[in-house]
Image (cartoon, rainbow, N blue to C red; front, top):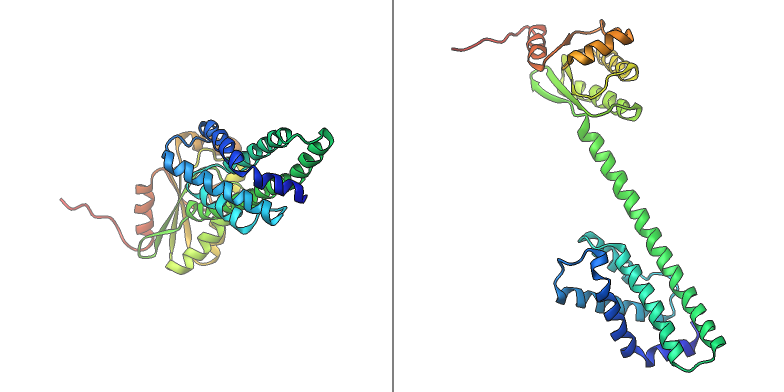
Length: 273
């Protein structure tokens, strides 16, 4: 940045600070920060202002580690990235006002302002890009975690496990179901697996195909599947689509499926009065 610009900004620092703090207070509601105490908001603004001026003094054209960490810290506690970018945009506008007040020629003012643009824009763009990358990474991690939780194989009795399925089953999730089934059958030494589909909203040809594939894979490793939780409307859909589920037992409820699983493992339910 031009030394004359830096000198002018340093000479006008207190005036810029006062105007900038007033601007940030006026846009406070836009960032949904009404619950933040006045003292905390003022101190945070002071810190951001100091970071911006450090960039000026060091003539840095990209976010420093300090600014990146500042933005990440605020976002972790619920502040928006727009608070930081808004602070930079407000700073840009106030600088223009200061330049106009400095009795510089129009050409010199626009030249200085253009230099300020070339200084601020890369910082804003990189902050947004870094935030987007972090968000994508977070979403990816959360997606994996949710997928792992959405298809668990739960051992309920010796040699008997249950896999409750909830939500839509697509190709990606069907692959996960297959992996969890095969891994879980071996890990828990399951002889019978109950696939519970009460929470699956739609069972179409593709979903049924995935379930049949999973059941066949389980059979190949020495266990057997029972499909439970078939609601009347699901049964009707399966019949209308001509889907053959005759390769493994089906039961309307988990209780009936559990009873069958116990019989298949040489046990039975006994009512105790």
